[in-house]
Length: 274
Image 1: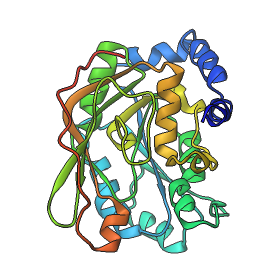
Image 2: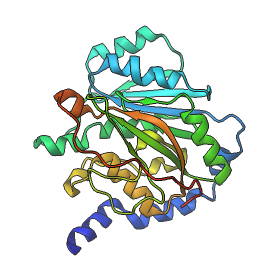
Image 3: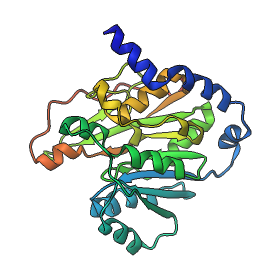
């Protein structure tokens, strides 16, 4: 167990992340994220082969934001031509699309491959983003209309580097569950985390912390592992006690069976930084 913890600490580059975070806070660009009266926010969406959900659900919710100064950066994970065609049909100047020439590469083992899916596309989307803030979104999930406005207000008021709210999980049988608690835990498992990235807004300076294709070796999904790295690096986090995003667990919907047993709704959260 101790050996695995040491390996994960080295893999996650915890010491380097803390150093880079301290260096980031001394830069001019870091301060501008809080001082710009109308900052550009980059919605970053990795995708593969779900053009209908991407356009009708995910992108539609991003374009409906009350904070209108946004760009949408979509990156295909070796996506088929239908994805590019669907985005072109939208004819929306705020959307920029990139497609990786190679998908993955992912583990041959299906479970580990699923935990890592979208990793290269997410990292590329973040690298291409031009905004002062990053709003991650999956291609089959949605933001509430005030997602960016609400989280941006909390981040600016409390000088947060990552603001998050409740992530509402929607299941085929009509039941719902919520992910979100404060203060966040420092140890995550695949099935339980303190917040979902779809329900978060990140300072653009945090782009140096990426998802890794090797995260599943530690039994973690790529987004959960990234969240863990940010918490352990000392990123300033805070939570608003409101639903800001809707999550439709892909494996549950695609399997077309009843939802698993779900934990109770999250407790009231403190918006102050951790």
